[in-house]
Image 1 (cartoon, rainbow, N blue to C red):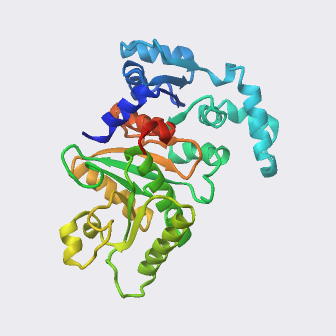
Image 2: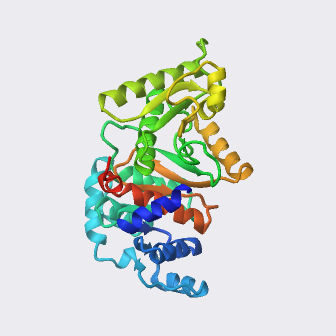
Image 3: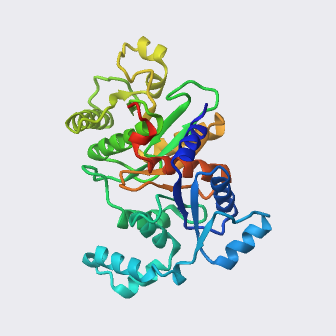
Length: 343
């Protein structure tokens, strides 16, 4: 079974509240309807109430079980603005500017997430990534000991056996163009945490490069090699349950026959479910090639390194993609002890 149906079953037992800043978009409306139909919790749609109702009527879509919020008319607006001003006072933000920002559905949705009025957030259907990411990075704190927020794509195959029953986690596909060694370390650990949370398995993290266990001292290889050592040490110090290996080529990470032929023996080689790419170019290109040439389902970007679950989807996403991203961040909001009672 692919990942999303498994997550849906978990959410039916532990429903969550998902906020969508772009409430009038047809794909968002369809995903929200699915959320209610599958009994996964309550979707919040932000935007003009009349416009959202008109868009729903055009789709012949019922709004039962869906909440609509107009930020500029919300009783939460003033309190959210005060909170934002206090958070950004050191950056010179004034209260009047904070009030203006809170009329923006992205900022309002992020503050709902930050204050616990929503469990997870999905944005990006109609806006640039920068517009959706800016409030998240300004408002939502980082995870403890993680300085770098990044992103991952969930690659889900229906019939392949790679990764975790056909599921792979690619990072970073959308935030940091040229990560440093320290940033690659953070990307590896924060992605592994989400992979473990969603699958219930010990993450098997492959730090990818153009060579496997090379003796070369080329700077590109040294960066990946050093990042692997940093991540391994940091995981051990924090007692994080994961396996990590690098530097590895993609085939050695995914195919145990290839890994064996290259003389690489580890819990990761040939069995990786988390692939950490050396830069944004390679990661973004790789996931789009897999999506379009291999026909894989792709869900994301899922933002990593933050204390609250959020997704910044592509403007080309379908309603199916939106729903899948919502299921992923919704399950992130479920306490792991509830997801896996025997663990």
